[in-house]
Length: 128
Length: 249
Ligand code: SF4
Ligand code: SF4
Image 1 (cartoon, each protein chain N blue to C red):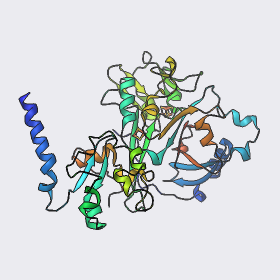
Image 2 (cartoon, rainbow over the protein chains, first blue to last red):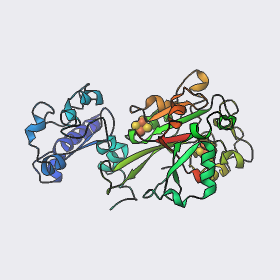
Image 3 (cartoon, each protein chain N blue to C red):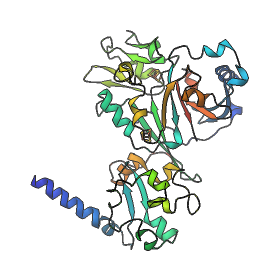
Image 4 (cartoon, rainbow over the protein chains, first blue to last red):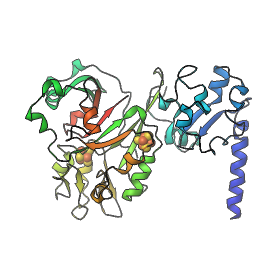
């Protein structure tokens, strides 16, 4: 039981501080969602550094700053995205590609998720 | 334990396809639109209405009733692996084995979506190599429904079927001391009144459509025979006449 709590606390510390330790950036790094399905990648690097979005663009109403908040909610679903919530606020087919198309752009799957955790290596083929 | 690997798939053009293969596909009711990876994956579109408007020949392509098959809508798969989990739970598949798997293809140079997931499973071939080579008839084509079945009691574990299967759909189950494989959930679900395989029922993206190819009004039949739609099978050069079809969109 004590081991469980130690693991839990280490896990939480890593979860909250992880991205900060990993790289010296002023955004949240890569977020790998695992609810409601395993393996969806949100890249802060892409959205903030390359596309130039402000923190407020999403963290004002759509997503809380704290990682895991959206995932804990029941309405964090594709249906809700299609209704314009969460990612769907921009991924509506006009601001950005629709959340109802090009599934595997964001869905990295169980394989992508395991790679992010370092459990498996990158695919051997097609690596550039 | 991935079932198949597809390296750098690219369309190699239909010019390179042997005439015989082209004719065979026309016989099956498909027009060929592209060949991928040296003929490993063949893109075909339905030309059924054109070639077999009312021919009895064509019906013979689906010799079973029901004739179970699956359509994989490849661009919808998100590798959530709920299908794999549902399959393992339903059919008691051990962690070291698999009855179905998801392959990944990454194309960093592609425009748009650069990643694709490809669900794979036993193709329940009309001409199954596994059945042809099994010395004890432990694996057989079920006359009632076309499913390639296993009788574990007869299996002597020689693994000849595993070598023969072009889809790598078989693994040795140490608990059963026999080869185990996908049976379209016949034992666990269909034979008990179920209508869908566990994987198709569990897929949140409707990437796997299970159906009965012998029926005109069946969802799989309709897509496979839809004019102008590109539908393909894996490894057609193996000549096994698979019953798992792939499409996009
Ligand atoms: S996919 Fe393999 S196991 Fe299934 S019927 Fe074909 S040869 Fe046999
Ligand atoms: S459940 Fe569906 S979307 Fe998920 S991995 Fe299986 S086929 Fe793909």
